[in-house]
Each structure stands twice: as C-alpha cells, then as structure tokens.
Amino acid sequence: MNISDRAKAMPASPIRKLLPYAIEARKRGIEIYSLNIGQPDIETPQSFWNAVHSYPAKVLAYGNSQGIPEYREWLVKYYRANNININSDEIIVTTGGSEAVMFAMLTVTDPGDNIIVFEPFYTNYNGYAVMTDIDLIPITTEPEQGYHLPPKDVIESKINERTKAIFICSPNNPTGTVLTKREIETIAEIAEKHNLFVISDEVYREFVYEGEHTSILHFPELLQRGIMVDSISKRFSSCGARIGAVITKNKAVMDSAVRMGQARLCPPTIEQYAAQSVLMQLSDDYFEKMVAEYKQRRDITYEELMKIPGLICKKPAGAFYIMAKLPIDNVEKFAKYLLTDFSIDGKTVMVAPGPGFYATDGLGHSEIRIAYVLESEKMRKAIKILAKAIEVYNGKQQT
Ligand SMILES: Cc1ncc(COP(=O)(O)O)c(C=O)c1O
Image (cartoon, rainbow, N blue to C red; front, side, top):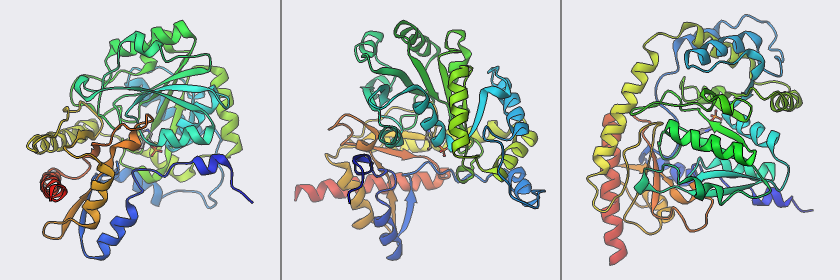
C-alpha cells in the first residue's frame, strides 16, 4: 500500500520542524527564547476565561455550521467599528484562520488552478496549497523595498489562464509590511481586468505601528471579488481557541463555504461563546495598550538587530515579525546549531529559517524570521544571544 502523492508532498511546517532539537536542548537544561512561532505571551482577556468557566449548557452540543448567530452579530459590530460594513450572513466562523484560508482557496479553485502570492509569505499557505491541490505562483518582494508589492506589470506577467485569485496578507507575516491603500487599489485594478478573486488575510489588522491598515472590504470595487480571512488567535491572544472567519459579500462563495462548513459540522462551541464575551466586554483601550506593548518590543528588537554586523532588515510597520538577512549562507544549519551546539549561560534562541517562507527554490537561505512575542527585555537578551551566536558560528566556519 502506498500513501497518496499529496500526502508525500505535504511539507513539514518550517516553524515547527526544529522542535525535536528544542526538546533535546530543554532536556539538557537549556532555556530557550522561542522566537520561531507567533505565539503571543500576552494574557488572554479575563472575559474569555470567565465565559469558559461559566458556560451555561449541560450538554456541549454542535453549534450552527456557519457559527453561533449571536457571535456573528457581535462580529458585525466589531467590523463596523473598523469601517467594514457586512451583515451576519456574510460571515462564516471557521476553525481558526487556517480553515478560513483553506475554505477561501477551495471555493475559488479547482485542482490544478493557481493563486498568485507574494513571497516571503506565511509558510502554511504552502501546506494548504498541497492539501487543496493548487499551485501557488510566487512573486518575490524584496527587503530593500520594504517587501512592498512590485509594479503592476510584474504582477500581471505572472497571471495565466489557470489563475483564479491574488492572495494578499497585510499586516504581513513574516515581513511586517503594511500594504498602502494605493497598493490595494492596484490589486483591485488587476483583479478587475483579469476577472480574479482577491483573498486577503487580515488576521493582524490591529497590529499596526506606522501607517494604517486598509481592508479589501473598504473598496467598493472589491466587494464582490473580495474574500477576507480573519482570526482571533493574535488579536485576543487566544491561538488555542481555534476561532477564525471567512467574510465575503459574494453569495456564491459564502454559500459554498457554508456547505463546506456543514461537512465539518461546526467550529468550536465554547470558544465562540468566549470570543463573543470578549467582544461584548472589550475595553476602549484594549488595542491601544496591546499595540503600545508590541511597538516597544519591535523597537528594541530592531535596535538590537541593527547592532549585528552584516545583518540587513527593514523596520516592520505591523504584525509582530521581522525578516532579517544574516551574514550566514545556510540558516537551516544555523538554526539547528543554535539548539544543538550553542548557549550562553544556559540560554539560547529558536528562530524560523527563511526558506520555508518562499515558494521559489533557493530563496531565503540567509534569512530568518523572528517573532517578537516576548516582553522587551527578554527580546533584548534573545537578540544579544543571536548576535553572539552569529559571531561564534562564522568564526567556526572559517577555522
Ligand atoms: C498570516 C496568518 N494567517 C493565518 C494564520 C492562522 O491563524 P489561526 O491560528 O487562526 O489558524 C496565521 C497564524 O500564525 C497567520 O500568521
């Protein structure tokens, strides 16, 4: 018996594949600053926990396939506060943003179709493309341009007869880039000309330190072509809740997503109830405080990184990641070395190697992604350890 070609092609998550080395390092008593994964350390709001502890039902039943109606009504209010006018029928609650991306891909493509993406991109898009049997057509963005989109003709030159959508993510994981209104207008023009959908991953909407976030649903011309993907994982520091959403005004897309939703029955019930509670009790300064905290972490991380000789990176405007190009040829080896061979005073760092964020072979071999998800002083210490590790590693390579 053989497993499927699809199963064989399924990539391991580059964010998680170093985990066995981290487990071994911890067994040796090494403390690891985990900068490899976007797992915030900010406490999940108390209103979430209160709702979990006081969940009123005696039976944990299946919920509505499209999501609990009251929760969707609260989402409508949340989006309205973000100048996104939708109604509750235009939302399907999903099992995390991950399922939302899958639903979005599945509703607009058939096997063998393709979607344009800008690399580096959130590495799991590669896995979703394998699972949905589609191709990702990568268009490379450059650190020197702050990972902003290339000119219109470059994007258009990649579109072919099997292209069904353009995928954008802003604020971006892994680059932290926030797309401008003009860039999204350009995407809208291309989509209209070539009759494409636009899928927009907006899970980091609030995490903006410079400029402002623009949603695809702010553009009248994208209301029918636009499919927005969202999640509470980062926004409410609740990655384990597994609550996301697809939002679209395109009825055919929503109807098919709902049928997919019916096939998997429902998203988590208690967690929707808890997410609703968070929205109901959200204080006016919740996002302000959160953004101020992450901005400080970003500033310290960037400040420390800029002290490293030969390192190239742009100060990111949003999300909580920095892509940095290191003076190292093979970051996969280096990231492993950090866990297997290096420590200072019993401490080391774990980072995500760059190649997994690219679809084009050969790119990202000198880049790493750092998630600044630890408090500022820990970030400072972690980057100092990274700096020393680069120095020692490069010294060893030469001997
Ligand atoms: C850009 C982006 N989209 C989607 C997801 C998936 O989020 P979720 O935890 O809601 O599945 C992540 C998670 O890190 C992400 O960074």
